[in-house]
Amino acid sequence: MPFHLISSIVSSLLRRTPEQQRIEGPKSSRPQSSPSLGFSSTATVHGLWVKKEDGDTHNPDQGPLSQHQLELKQHWHNQPPVFQSESSVGVDDYDLLETLGTGTFGRVYLAKEKGGRRFYAIKVLKKAEIVRLKQVEHINSERQVLSEVNFPFVVQLYSTFQDDVHLYMVQEYVIGGELFRHLRRAGRFTNDMTKFYTAEIVLAIEYLHSKGIVYRDLKPENLLLDSQGHIKITDFGFAKKVQGRTWTLCGTPEYLAPEIIQSKGHSRAVDWWSLGILIFEMLAGHPPFYDDNHFGIYERILSGKAQYPSYMDSAAKDLIKRLLIGDRNRRLGNLAGGAEDVKRHKWLRHTDWHGLLNKTVRAPLIPSHANECDTSNFEKYPAEQPEDLPKGDPFSHLFTDF
Image (tube, rainbow, N blue to C red):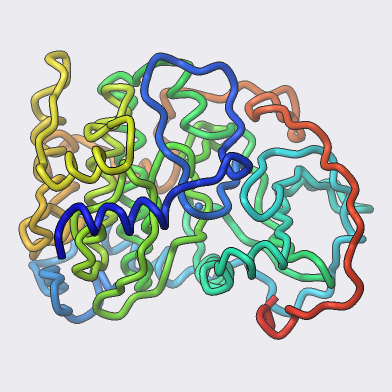
């Protein structure tokens, strides 16, 4: 298929209408990442232990497992999720206090359980909008994925429920806000800061892939900082359990891997590509393939030509180049050593992986907060205007798991 036709199709599917744009504060000088085609909250494999699949050159039998790999396999891989499938709570059991973020389908609220002392982030999604925008599969997939995972660097989902109009996802409140907001304030991160966040994300990707999950929307907007400054990956609207390859077109333009743009089918390798883009953006303050329009972005991605700032660490630059290889069968992270190849790269060579997993390594940035319900690390949003609610629920059969 001609490239201009591919780009036209991709652009039409990923383009956002004005009301779907993320609400931002004062703009910085760096180019802004485009929003992804899904609900973006501000509150979204078989790697080490499964057989090799078509188009994925990861080999689970590549040498003995390292000490931290064993811990990952024996402890975190077998850690039961905190999700409560039989929960009988509903929206009336919570006080919705303040909006933390808005998106295509609804809002994320800071909430407090009535009669309790704990705070949560509750994602409130409008069923009619989900159906209108044909995102039913993505929302159901997000619930399924988050209900099956439990890892230090992935946001926790505690329960879900619904009423006639909305779906509700009760998640942990991650008080430090988006990494994107902190990056925008700083302009760009130092080499050591970037290395810290990268290492935690590598562990999270490795864990998700071990569960058969491809994340597919890695970017600063979908990374939160907890009270200690550690990463929490959120917004799993595009995450999917994948056997072999999938052809679903989704993601954020600047972060799309070549195989997604070219409709070649994709799998775990796209997350390693996105990691390369993310490392570049943290170090440079902007993504490597930025352009004023989607067509230009796709063209730059397929050309593979990026301009690296002179101040960028040479080892970091080498890792980025190995992650941004257009041929997924040669891309670091998707080779015989899998995630271990990334962790053994010279830029990450002295990383304390055990300390990161146990959160004993001090984070480079500790988000300021006065108390456990502080929202100062989030943008401020106007209250939602009341609206007439429809009678009945014509969509309940589409969300039976909620």
